[in-house]
Image 1 (tube, rainbow, N blue to C red):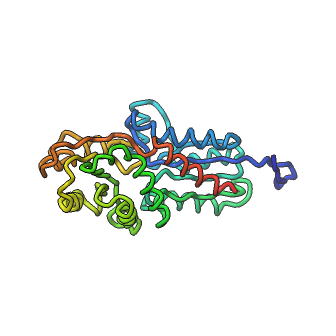
Image 2: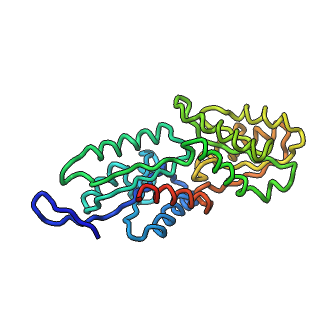
Image 3: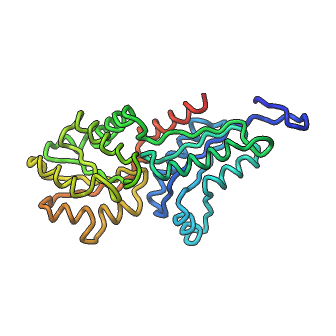
Length: 280
């Protein structure tokens, strides 16, 4: 193990840490997706201390209140890791696009990177979210095609994906880039919409109408976890959920697939690869 001299001449052991940062979820079943990514990091890097932080204060407080479990913010987690003697940290987000949440994480990482002396890290790096570039979108398209390969064997079935979306951030364009990538390998089989931005569910319906051979739909979250948005906005009992809106458009055979992307082993592979790139 490497070490360096402290200001007082004592050796400071070189210790690696990985901070997995998620928006979070208060849905116990959905937590499996996050845990899968955390466990994959622990298995791939047994020498590193792997920790978890949530960015949503609302979710953190709800979990503390209802489950009596404390989950730190990224800033709290990094401060604890520094205090415990970890010298090198890879901060790895579970986010799909580099939107507002990712910008917030970057500001925290930059702040810790600016600290010098005994309260600073020797090295701290921030990993990229899943859709950070055009090649990332191409790879995600391949993952999604494999994920729903069995359902796509039926030519009358299409996959409707619900992303979160961020209306005032340029990173929202990555959803359109992913749609282009999906169209190249499976034209007319995947349709992406978002909860809070564009493309919308209305855009999804317009796209579906251009393919009259499609009669069956699979609804699935384009999110790491299948949490509140998936269970309510996408497949909930209310009339304005995507499930009921699509049925009103004449699609009677709509199957919700309430499994977060984080549970997919191919997504875990990408996650581990991103961490390995930072550790090199």
